[in-house]
Every structure is written in C-alpha cells, then in structure tokens.
Image (cartoon, rainbow over all chains, first blue to last red; front, top):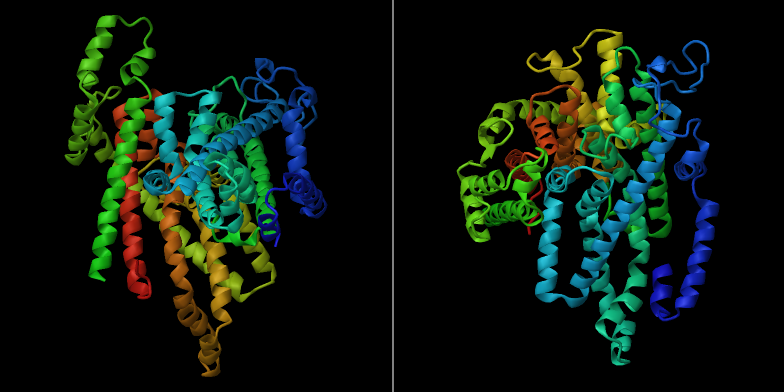
Length: 304
Length: 306
C-alpha cells in the first residue's frame, strides 16, 4: 500500500518527508518494548561512555587490582564488575566497548550502503554491460563467505579502527546492490519515470530524485537487519587480533583477553560476551520486527 | 539432467576463476606487498626492497604476474610463506585434514541437533519445548561462536573437568569445538525445519497417512520430514558459509591446528602467499560443496531446473 501511494505521487518530496516522519512516530509507538529499550540503553551507553564510566581512561589500571573480583564474588570493592589482568575497570571498558561497536557498526553500514546503493542504482538504471559487470561482481561477493574477504582485506590494509570499518564496509555492500538493482528494474518502467524522462529530466536526476526514494524503505530494513551481524563481525575480527588496535577497548578483544584467564576469572570473558549476545539479539529482534512492519515481502530476500 | 549438471559445473568453475581474479586484484592493485612486508622491519634499505620486489615478481608487468599467479594456483603452487620459509601449499596440506574434521563434525552435529529439535518444536507447537527451541534459535544467532566456545571450556573443561579444553588428536577433543562451530547452523536449521514442518503437517497427505492408522512417529519422521527436507537441503549450502566462518574463529579458541589458524596468523603477520592460498582453498571448498548441494537438490526435487 505504502509503496503504491508513493509511486502514484512521486514528486511531492515534502509529503513524502511528512509521511516519513509520521512513520517514524508510528515505529516509536509500536516497536517491541524490551529489545528497543535495551537498544536505547546500548546507544546511550555508547554515546555517553566517557561521562558514564567510573574511570576516565579505559586503559588505566594498576597491577594491585589484577583480576579484582566483581560484586557477586565476596565484598564489593572499587570496581563493580571487577578488573582485568592489568587492573583495568571492566565496567569502564564495557561502556567504551559499546561506543566502539556503535561507531564501527554505523560507519561500516554507511560505507556498505553507499557503495551498494550507488552500484545498484547504476546497474539497474543503465542496464547493459554496466549492469552485467556490476552484477558479476555481486555474484562473486555472494560466492564467498564474508570472513574470507575480510581476511584478504586485512592483509592488504592492515589493522586499525578505520581499516576495520573499511574492511567490513567493503565486505557487505553486495546485499544492497542486488536489492536496489531489483527495485530499480521494477520501478524504472513505471509511468511516472517515463513522464519524468519526457519532461526532460536527465538520467542522474531520475535515478536520485525519482527512483531512490522508492528503494529507501528496503535499504533501511537491510541496514537494520545487518547491525547485529556487523557487531558480531567486528567482535570476531577483534577477538582474532585482526580488528581494532590493542589500545581501543572492544568487546571482542575483551573476550580474547579473558580467554587467557578463564581458569581463574571466568567472568572476564563472560561479561563482554553476554553484552555482545544481548545487543545482537535485540538488534535482530528489532530488525525482524521492522521488516515485517515496513515490508513483509522482504522476508524472502534477506533471511539471515 | 545431464545438461543441467554440466551447466552448473561450468558455472562453478567460472565463479572460482572470478574469485581468484578478485583475490589477485585486491592483493596486487591496492598496495605494495613488498613494502607492507618490510614495513614491519625498521629501516630497510632500498636494496633489500628492490631485491624483495624482484623475488616476489612484482617488477613484472601485471599480466605476467597474473599468469604466474593463475598457472601456479592450478599446480597448487601459491608461492612461499615469508614467515615459515616454506611453500604455502605444504602448510595447507598439513592442516587441511584437521579443518575438514572440525567442519565435518560441526556439520553432523548441526544437522542432527537442528533437525531433531526443529521437528519436535513443530510437533509440540506452543508448548514449553517450542519456546525453548525459539530461545535457542535466537541465542544461537546472536551469541558469538568464539564466546560460546570459551564458555563451553569454562563449564566442561575447567569446572567439571570432563572434556579437554583444546588440542587436536583424540575424539574427545572434537566435542567442544564441534558444538561451538555447530551452534550458528543449528539455530538456522532449527528455524527452517520448524516452519517447513508446520507447512507439511497441515497438508492432506499427512492427514491421509494418519487416517490410514499409521504410527504417529512414522507419519512425522518419515512422511512429513521427507517432504519438509527439500528447503533444508538448500540451507545446508548457506550453512557452509557459517561453518567456514565458525572454523576460522573457533580454531583459535581451541588451539586447533587447521587452516583457520593458518589464515588468521597469516593475516596477522601479513603473510600474503599463505592468506591468498588459504582463502582460495576455502573458496574452492565452498563453491564445490555448493555445487554438490545443488546436484543433490536436483535429484531430490526433479522440478528444479534452470
């Protein structure tokens, strides 16, 4: 329904904007309560980590507090969730880790989305050899598990926060490209696009002004569904030592650190892992809900 | 049928070739491997740099480099690892079996557990068991496999001391990594089996089988599951991607001497030839396995043709 209305009334960007903001209002009202609440807490924790954490510097610690126990083991000391092998406060690192996950997830998806949407629009709109070249590239990306692409890219680019973002972004663009191309092909032949062409709009203007708004919903859905996966991806890379550098606290790296002390301090690995699981779980639930709410057709397209 | 198989096989070869081209392009066109490798050693001289480029064949024109890379890959010659000072192909050969074992066990566990729980949740719809299955599927898709692996070690190796925490060789050492690798695929299989079974259980021929007075177990596990299995077979292909990601990460947790550890360490040391070779190896395995899945699929469901 929503799609139909928009395609009949394509040029009214203003109405589109107001209907979009009304839609956001509906989403806020109807979203599943528990996952959304946890996600809001996660985002707030990530944004305000430096002000919320007990310690100013996530990397500061003294060996006196080596493996200090969390609150449920014996008396409460300075650190609520205990300290790691270097006496660094786990809660502080957890909050800063949320920040890193947030930054990586959103930047990587922004990169993947921009590349994918651009290539998908180009392929769908121009067709012909351009289309087949781009789609062969998409096929190759689909033919490889993303961890393999990431390994190759890490070798080429080396580690580092920006590089992790680039690596993940370059690994995940193909989903957007395939979906956007498909939508463009179905929209391209509609009357209003032909009318815009007759009215003298150029190819670029038609693609951006008339076709792009129609694929917007699907892009948002894929992006939301991907957030959980990207957080997992970053955690895995950081766990393997191929992700963010050592001085940046990240959840994956905290698990890797905790692994070395699992016989004496199991919570060091358990706490950040639980955080990852909860946040990814909530993003998945929220993404599934958003897809069913905005566009149940996509159930077939993205089923990860 | 024969035509379909032939076309599908040709398609796989082309994909594999294209993957090799992409890997080559990414490693050669985006940077200077010689400079990257030497970057770790401080103050290398211009001479060593030139010598390195010459040795790696980086001074040749790009099409010559590509020819050397491709013809080498066909003869399983991927160049020498600069860390181990040994041909990358040998390093792979030592570790191939270990990875295959882990993936095989992971696949077996995921199929048995995922399908069993999936069928049971469909049969006992809306009971506590169904809810447990749903929770397992959600957690299985959200929990990082490396973390599950570590938690399994904490519980079964550190606390109860009934299973070894790592290493390679004995069958007991396969259990924990096998489950850790299988968790993601279990979640996906469980969800799909459940929904597929629910569809089938509603159908006329299942009612017919029941009316005939067949034993309920026979109706479910033979008549219903056989037909519910068709979409499950396609998922196995997708699950292989899960399994590959799983092994790459899980091998590190359990000190498993496989291709994953090799690739990860190679990426860490920026050992080009090793990473290229392992990634190509995994890609080939993945593409071939998917070809096999498609062939199986065509046999099970004769309606499928391109």
